[in-house]
Image (cartoon, rainbow, N blue to C red; front, side, top):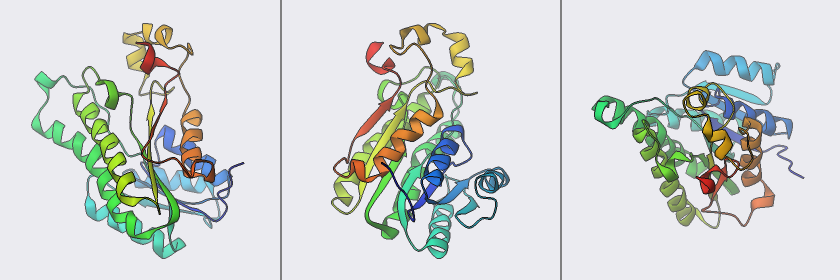
Length: 245
């Protein structure tokens, strides 16, 4: 039901677990994929794994905190594929730190990557987004509820939610903008949290962790024709944990 044949995806933070699932799904449905990440070598290896002959992918190093990197990524995308049909911002930084122990540099680094980075990529891409295109920003349940020892991350993700709604107002009706807020998703990042708070699984109505593929499916839906009347919304992917605790 979803066909991205000939559509151009620009995906930031593309070497992450959820991002890789997004890239695989879009590529599998025919998309042309521009994959960027701070780990330039890692994302290049992933792009080669996805598309060995390189005809439908382009990998780039991008520091999400730098406006000039966002502009270069967009320029390279347009030079290679002519336009952008879907922008998915997934670059992020998640580190433990209590506010009482947090340095100004740590605060600013988290905001720069998790919030400023979304702004930089969206602003750079807007002039090149095609009619009917979509922006999907990866937020987090932390942006709705706060998060113990992750105030900088939660604050940034809360900003992403507000930025997304503002983009939806500014860009309609040509372009849609939505957010996805993952909860506890299987992977290395969540394991220390589950070890410290095993009750989180029991408190989740679905009684399990989510998967990167389940998040990717929601991202694909929001970028597809199936969601063409959906904008300014946030879809939670957390097995009901957000409403249950």
